Amino acid sequence: MRIAVIGAGGVGGAFGAALAKAGADVTFVARGAHLAAMRTNGLRIEGGRGETHLQPTQATDDPASIGPVDVVLFCVKLWDVESAGEMIRPLIGPDTAVIPLQNGIDASDRLIPILGAGAVMGGVAQISATIAEPGVIRQTGTFMRLVFGELSGGKSERGERFLALCKLAGFDATHSDRIRTELWLKFIILATNSGFTAATRRPIGQLRDDPDIAPLFAAASQEVIAVGRAAGIELPDDVLERTQAFSRNAPPMMMASMAHDLIRGGRIELPWLSGKVVALGRELGVPTPVHAVLNAVLKPHTDGAA
Image (tube, rainbow, N blue to C red; front, side, top):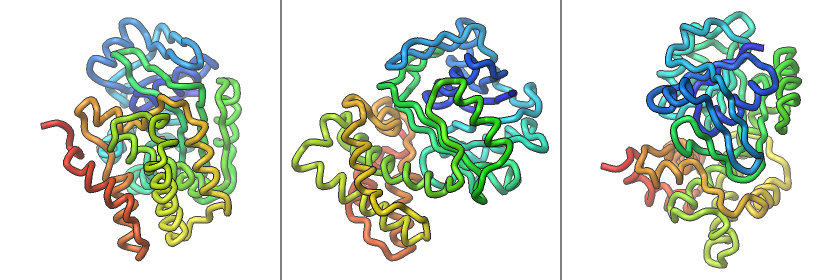
């Protein structure tokens, strides 16, 4: 199976390396020092699941040089969705599956006008990993899960083929027939955890048991749940319990990618996380006071350090 990974950061690098080790023909699209390091020394994944060294690593900054592929793992930052979507047109064949693995809930919908509804699936990546240095991805903990599915619901042959490869690669994978629900299940967790770990610059282990902070975690999650249901998303009755269980069991040193970006002085994905919760809440008439505070506190940092 031919796979192109667009954006070889913590998500794309870790999943792409695992798929390559399982025998897939994987090419990473990256840039700058990270691309140069991968070309020279390969891509190294280290952390809770042990070490993987992909040497040599197929990497380029030009998607047109790859040609049509079976699967595109689309892992760029949310502000790059449209520009990267235009760039990957040469990768799209008649049955190519583009699986966006961004944070947030709208990357697939933003790609459809560019690539066509037939090419775009929905996807959810659950992993805590970041670029430690050029050519090196460091994962926190061992959790590594990929969920993907057709936006229209049901299951497809291309999804089943990709699922078989994911199982060979050794990480948890699900070919879902309700991917929009899965996107929201992650969004509830991520919008809340991103907001709190970024606002405090502290890992989740220092926050989840604090008697002053824990109730706010629950309230923020409830806000996203209420917004999702108002938007017509089917969510399970125990969704809050699931959300709280995930946070309780997360590695104590885990920080959301937005917190890592903020600490490095980089641009952050706030408009698509707490900012999106607030915007949808206003549109749908759902109060979101906790996310409104998180959004306000983090908003001056949206474009990174001066």
